[in-house]
Length: 217
Image (cartoon, rainbow, N blue to C red; front, side, top):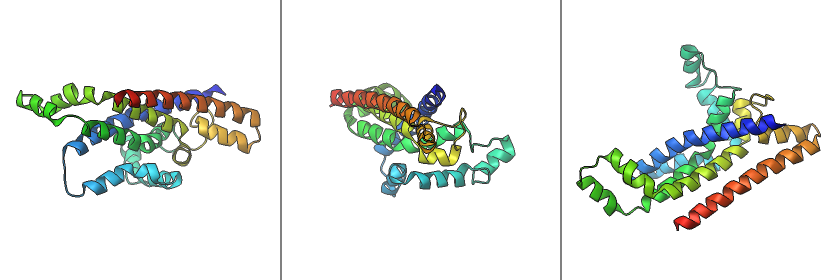
């Protein structure tokens, strides 16, 4: 019964890493520049938070499925098929958790004193150096809280993961899918144990992220 837990932790950690890199980079760009259509771009980045998981899963199938927009080329050129793999589960969880990191990081960047950033630039620092040495350390608590919330969201991801990765015990069966499978099979004791495990982990993550946000404010 521990296999779904380890798989869920692996998927959630990698998904948080992928979503973290993308979310922080996008948040920095969106917080520093204004451009036509920025509201639409922001809405698209937040869309995974409000879309039904099955709709998001369908979009992923259209995009990275064997015959998908990108998936067909991955399969033809590199022999990579992301359907029914734990790597596909990572992609699904990363997309679902991306808005949490993006929103937290953007809010943290927008609260920075622009005079500090301007002073660094006048002293000869490039944009990347300003980001790494000034902006990122100052916004770190807000970003960390977003990362922890994204990790909790990735651990609980179900719908999109089921559509893209399936339910293969020992390969793609995460905790949330294992709980669903146990309930369907009438294994109530197993379902209860798995539910308690994921609930405790998520509560710990939420408490820690809440304290980070309180310290930040």
